[in-house]
Length: 422
Image (tube, rainbow, N blue to C red; front, side, top):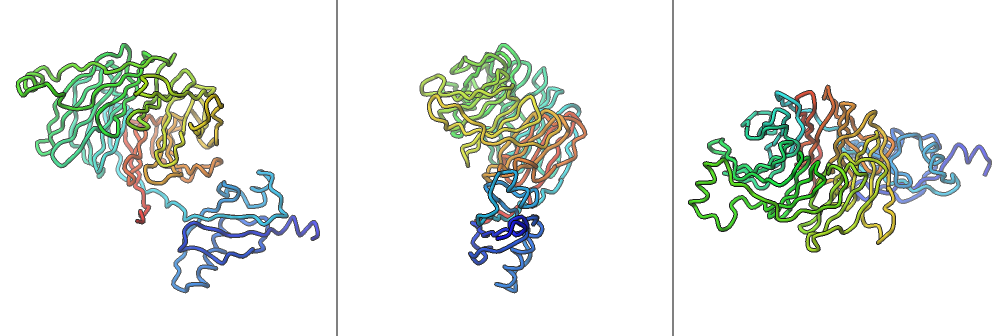
């Protein structure tokens, strides 16, 4: 085989896990400088030959586990792969470009967003909590806090009643009951115990408990049950008059040295926290203590664990996102699995998709929300543009909507066009 042959040609084998798009399992000889577009043409031509009814599909191509974003030869050179071997290329149907929906206008910075079904909860720097429909209709403004809201979370939601919590720089978490028919909200209780502003809150899957992280460096666990047992109708009525009874923490966990910026229930007994002290910690509630810790080299602004992959995506005081596997063996360093480059300023917020195991979104001080595939570290799949100021929070709890809040006083909604196949 002459040198020019090696330089100019490659042998590839095309594989896919999506059986309906499988092509013959034989080596194809192609030019080394082939691009994603040309590979798309090749696969669609092969599918067309096998089935004249085939309609063109856009694919992304994985070579050595990474999406092709350069031509194939350059991609392989960067990864140090020999051109002599047959190269396995996996292809997957490309995730469609999300569609911009409404922009929800607030009176101040939007620092907290959470979707549940077709409702969006937002927390604002004017100390209010707001409820919106995913179609962009404003339902209710709720006042009660005396400082900016930093985090919101749903506890439960049915046709009659929504129960949710808001965490504020005023050092309290308030639990609210929203009567949907009457469209009124009342404070069910006020959680007191933190000595500095509260930055994050999350509710356990069994909706029995919630966890909060604060600038006082403490992780606190509280009951999330709206009507605590032992309260008879009389006390419940009295509590309403006081604008909610006071609730104290069940458990305080100490160990972080600086502000806790993120908190998440991994399961009903395990909590993940991220902190400005350069560490992530996993806490075991059955032991009431620390289970393991992951040390980074910068403050963590946000961390999010994927229930689908078991991996953690993080953002820090730099422009990069990092992927960690928390299952490092005891004492082993948790190596960074991958680094994602694309933001031009600090990244403030990250959130995994709840249905697509490879996908997550991020929002940064560069006014950008980006949609990523963890197999594409060099570039995001899409830029979800629109914010005119820094992005403060993002959420993708509802697979249909990617939602972000920013310092331009707006919430931006992008709709996923992905058809979920059973």
